[in-house]
Length: 563
Image (cartoon, rainbow, N blue to C red; front, side, top):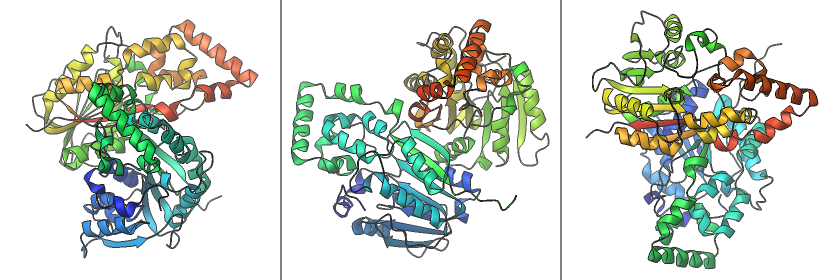
């Protein structure tokens, strides 16, 4: 399959440096968008390698699991890893060179393609990806209606964010031609017939545990585990080794790593979920806003942002199902997240918010006499947390942190830190906190912020960067386990509509406008109205919309470790 690497040879040491990157997220995507559990699925792993992903999914007993790869060595490793004769899952293996897909139409419920696409093109030019397109069309054909394809890939921007790509710049240029951008991959998926449902970038290199080792490139086995090195010339490898050895000797190697490592901004990998849609045969916590007022129309434009990802993180890092958890929703708003989790019947679900209006909406939305879940509501202004120590299995804080600071300066976040310390205290050992938030980079990638630059500067002082939030979590006692950037604004319908700002109801439901002066809003409305009349509004949107690079929100999972 690969035009880059001899995977029969690489298979011998592959598992020593590679893991199934964030497989729990793939599972969450598959289950959420098919509406089935893994146990009810026929799954195909395309470019399966040594079977790391298949090994993860096998614990959930899919109905069948098919592994295909072009490398005989990789398949042999996979066969040796996975137990034969399983009572619940039919296992099969086949050596296949993509884009061939020797299976009948409408056969599988879910397919995954993990770190494979960059191997496919024979003559990559960075502009068209004919073999990728053919492969995706074949996957579409073999999936059932309602079936889901998940993809893990790397974009050119993410390659440049990997520190080691700056060691061999000539090779990095070759790789830029091999890697589809987010927009190119989205276009290929849509041309194949898919509907893109979800897209994230991971901010941690969990697929390669030794990623952050600046001396890694000196090891041949380290290089063999990353396809990037397979297109280097021998002279480029030798020159790189000389340069790394020199920097190590001079004591500048760590500085080189820290200067060029940007994955906490641009991400290490992209994870997508696309669906073969079924065709119907028919013809006062906040210092920013008055949330008692906002609660009246809040649900008309806001949903539970990628709640299935939050659920997957909680279950993966606690080792429990939601049904076995005592949960708390901190800054619950009108209860959208709680409403999502209630279907999985947690043992208890506690909702707290600073706004009486928001809590009243949440109480009206959720059943007061749920047969399986103990529900409770409390009006609380953070960082207060009136609960005993070691009480909850999981906590979530969704789009709340930017409301906490009384005098935001962008440098320190004392209220956020106090809140996280309190959350740490009330969580049980082994429990997980998930956070959905936005960073300054993500705000700047939002086209609308360029209409109102003065307010954007205020917000940059309210929002923690990834590094700042990671530091606050660690100082509170947490261990950061996972971090993703969402590339699709599922939390806020109308995000991509340049005319949304003209609607007062729409503005009411975005915290961004809560810090604007009336004069700033009137000027923004005049400018957007003028661009609309001149026919330049769409061009303005496309020029300033950078969500495909920086994302729209960040979702993190942090754990209170068991001592």
